[in-house]
Image (cartoon, rainbow, N blue to C red; front, side, top):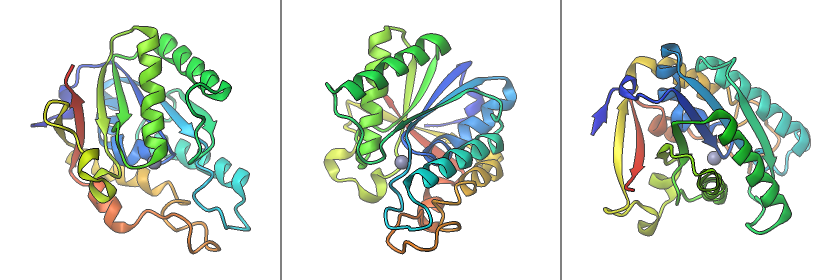
Length: 235
Ligand SMILES: [Zn+2]
């Protein structure tokens, strides 16, 4: 199914990004299409993103995390939602607190407060079994908050790593979710500009950690094309 993103009727859209860059790679097309139509967005960045370059001497964790927040703010501006609300939860990248811990409970309560305050009618989430621990944990955290508020919102799940790294059991089962493709060709320049704002992740900022993470051109090409794909869960 390929849809025009402008056909989305939701007016208050909550974007859940495990890391600073997932909002642009996963949802940039929908955001850039719907923002000029007057829709409101609240973006939650779940982790601090501070673990992408563990061996960089010049970009220790705190400096990197601060840079990633600035990059995220610039990406939102390029997507047309520079003045929309966003929240940085600053949970430890690649080590989110486990369910049942005090830290997890605190994050869950903060998430519930955002849902109650923003009252989203659509939530864009990482795919529930995206093969990255933070993506799965962010999905679980957001889902827990939505369940706790008992406020019904439609959800769409975007997969970042599934096609590259996923095993067959990570993929959506036929009775679990249906794929929905949105034609985002008209806003591709904005989406690509937003992805490019994440200089620390594209290899353009940090040069003293050859083993650090970087988004490859192939990954960017795969995720920042004219079709933005989501999985809509069956209820
Ligand atoms: Zn991510």
